[in-house]
Image (cartoon, rainbow, N blue to C red; front, side):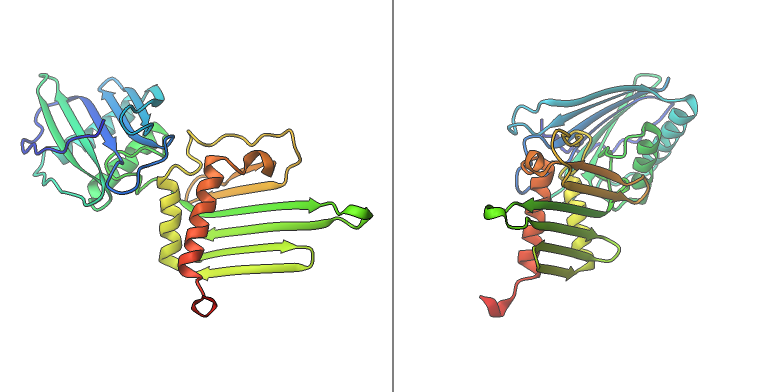
Length: 290
């Protein structure tokens, strides 16, 4: 279902009646996870009727539907969205080409049923399209929409903390041994900090890399970390020994608690673990310990 980028130099004219936007974040490089959302189709009507259908990667050929949402926006909301779309696409429009990016395709239909098509790369760089994307996300109350900029203006992840604790019971009636892990990924501080303690032994890895930590958080979010599709409440039929908190730039933090043995194979924790290991291998490597 890969979208084909084409050139449509004709500008929009008339009164906007409907909008159809197809956004795909599939670019070049490693294939996404089978359950990652990679394509979104949004249809808007002038009366405020909106439908959003999203698709997962699946096997790469047959993409299963992951979400199908319908809503009705207020006259004020749809009027503002249509006004901004009309303003931008009725002026001189230069189509850009993104390298290793996804893409969007837009069909605008006026009240005379005349259609105009536009397309471009799914990436940040155009202030007007970023503002338009932010407006639509806000009015639809869906911060994870790709739209025109690939979520560059979405409510981004600023900080992730993970705390895990456990108790090992010794043989022979010895005192139990306690252990813990603590992970912090902090965009503002530019910090990745990992601490592991077992008994009286504690080890810490601390990496200060402002730009790299920000890119790591952006990559996790782009890959669907704690997305609405993947995010599920942790199972509660065991003791709570896992605490995962995600802090956003706007919305309230999200806390997930649960039992490690039931969650350690979950897609979210697997993504987080792999990303942190890769980061530490690249930035905390000690040449003299080779």
